[in-house]
Each structure stands twice: as C-alpha cells, then as structure tokens.
Image (tube, rainbow, N blue to C red):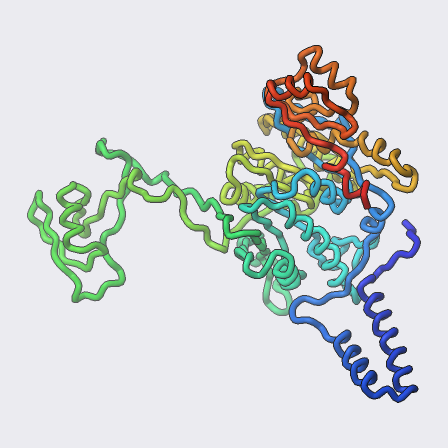
Length: 536
C-alpha cells in the first residue's frame, strides 16, 4: 500500500523540523548579535532535546491509521457466517474481521463506557515473525523494534480505555520481551494509580529438556490488569466446598474438621480444656480464647480426637463464598487446548493458543454473569470458548484480522464447530453475527451524498450496540416517513421498542402520541454513529 505524504515517524519529523527552525533563528540572531535572543533560543533547543520522565519512544504512523484520513471504516455483515445456535434467545455475540484499529474505531460508536472486561493477547514482539507493522515483520535487529510496537499498542489501548465501563478492567497478556514497556505504557494511558496487579502464570510445570547455557528456563508469562476507577473488583475464587460432609446428620448442615491448635502462640499461653463425655484433659496452645472454646464445647462443635481435638466448621457459617486471589495463578499448560484444536479443526494449524483452562479461570474470577467481554486480538477464539463454557448471560465481541484466513478458517470455523457439536464435544447454545470491515471513501461522496451513503451501514452498528439481530422488532431503523407510517398503520411496533430515526423524518402529533403510548425510545442516527466523520 502506497500513500502520499506518509510519515513513518511523524513525531520525530515534527520535532526535527522544530529544532531545525529554531537553529535557523539562532544563526540569524548570532549574525545580528542579538545576545538576548541567542540565550533564549539556545535554551529552547535544550528544552526540545530534553526527554520527559517515564516512557519515551519514537512515534510511528500506520497505513491503517492513514487510511482513515480519507476513508471511513464501516461494517458489512457476512450473512453466510451467521450462527443461530440458540433460536430461543435474541442475544448475539460478534466476530469482527479486519484490522482491529478500524474495529475499535467503530466500537467507540457503539460501546463507549459499556465493556466490562477487555482481554487481549497481543504480539509479544519476540522478533520471531510474530509482529507485523505496516505489512512487514519486525525483526530482532530492527532499531525501532520497541517504538514500532509501542506506537501500535498505544493507539489501540487509548481507544480500549474509552470502551471500559467504570467497573471494568483490561487484562493484557505479555512475556518479558515487552513486559516493562507495556507496564509503563499502561501507566501512562490508564494512570499509575489504576494499576491492579501483574498476574503470573506458568506455561510449564518444570524446566525439562537440554538446559540452556545460562541454566535458566523461562516458564512464566504475565497478565497486566488495569482498572479505570476504584469501582472494579475481582469476583474472587469460589471456595472449595467438596470437603464439607454431614456423616452424623447434624441439623446444622455439612461440616468439615479444622484445627483449633495454635501454631504461633508461645507455650506460656497454653491452657486446659476437658472432654465433658470422658473427663479427659487436653493442654495446649489454642487458636481460640478459653471463653470461645468453652462456648464451642457447650454447642457441641468440638470433635474429641484421641491426640488432639478439632472443631466442626459448618458450611453455612462460612462468611464469604469466595476467597481472595493470589497474583500467581499456577500452571496452565496449553497442550490440552492445542490437541483440542487439532481434533476440532484437523485441516488447519494454529500455534500457541492460550490455554482454555486459563481463560475459563480468568472469566470465572473476573466477569459477572451479565457482562460483555471484548478481545481485539482474538486469534483462534479461545476467549469466546471460555465465555461460552463459563455460562451465565455473558456475551463476547471478538476482533481479528484475516491474515492467512485466520478469521474465517480458524476463529469462525472453531465457533461453528462449538455450536454444532462433534462426537467428542456437546453443541453449545449461542448466537453469532460476523462483520467484515469495509470503507466509504469520503472523496467519492461530496456534500449530502456522503450522509446518504453512510446510512447504508447503520444496521450493523445498531445490532452491535444492542447485541441483537435487527429482525428483532424491539429495534427498528427508520430512514423515511413512509416507513414509519407503514409500521404504525400495520401495528408492527412493539411496546418499549427503540427507533433509530433519520433527522429528516418528521413526526406529526398523531404519530408522536402513538409512539408515546407504546413507550417508544427515539434516537437520531447520522450524528449518533457517523457525526464525527460527517462534520470533520
């Protein structure tokens, strides 16, 4: 792709131009012996060369970003890839094919402040042909390796921030190649005070194989978590209740044995408790006070073992159904997920998918049941499968490019198989719509014709915002007065529906009254979805 006036490194060019201009002024001041000007201009050059504290990198421009100066991204549905795995539900999930910068640009129109969890697994920038910038792989030897990656990520993360709800969180997978840079970048975008945790998980349980020269094998990766307000909370890990039984039919319900001996108190704090049934004495340092233990004995909550008494800990007395999370999540080997994908899609190959068990755990400890999860580096679609299997009323939005047909032949193919089921996997009940990115060239539609052209692409945005299929009568798009008249005349509007109306559609008093009776919500559509493009 060749673009006129394309600035590969716009910030550097701007800075260099400014410095050169000031230098020309400085030369002129010296020529004219303007001593005061000389001092000020020299100071200005020093300031221009000064670097700020924190992350500093060379800004690079992307082809996909430059495209949006003349072309407006739009979504077009591929109806052949629609999945209706749950015909009893009106809720839909979405797979967006195209550069994720374009998809994020459109999601800003529909989901600003509405996404509960963003999880992404971006390129790690290892230099092993895992990161493409402007259609070229970034090599290990590239002197702008880090700045290209940071430019790429910063544009996407700034939009991602706008999408999060005030209780939302973004979780970004990374390894050591860019972990430190990513932390500083996210500190800058989301605010250092909104850093939640750097979660560590192991991709191997041991360092097997031939030891490297330095005798150190990296087995872990990170997930950086950032909030946008202090309203975010992890759900926590559900407590294991499998140990609670009721072998003696205690009317207080299931219980488990737990220790009452203290491991920290000094020996001088020891005292004696007595089994009221046998009179046997037990002297030790206890985790409870003498008064508390006497009360527990009276309530028949002590199990009198031969060597050491224990307590009955009842399930219904547990204060919290969840426990706090550790920042080290343990081992999640992706071998099982890799084998699953090979079995599910034997004709395709996808290297290093994120472990499904890791993603399911992430969903379960992070995402409430009525939530929207966005993954704009969707890859093979593991995030979607984790959301589906986690259950509840969770919905997902995936975005991925279609390089090597990954969106159509891997991501969508995987979801289709999950919906249909196989001889080793039960069919999953979910609905999906598949959108591709297209463009409207502003230069081809002068004046009012641009607005008319953009109106053709309203439907996907309405469907995306509401998570529905437009055939659902609760949402309608009204572009002409005749269309509205027809809907009212034939009583095809449902109670509480939302109508997206073109601003040129005018309502008479009778129509307004009918819409009020039906509790209809009205929205103007061009300004709502494409106003920025129309007025820029």
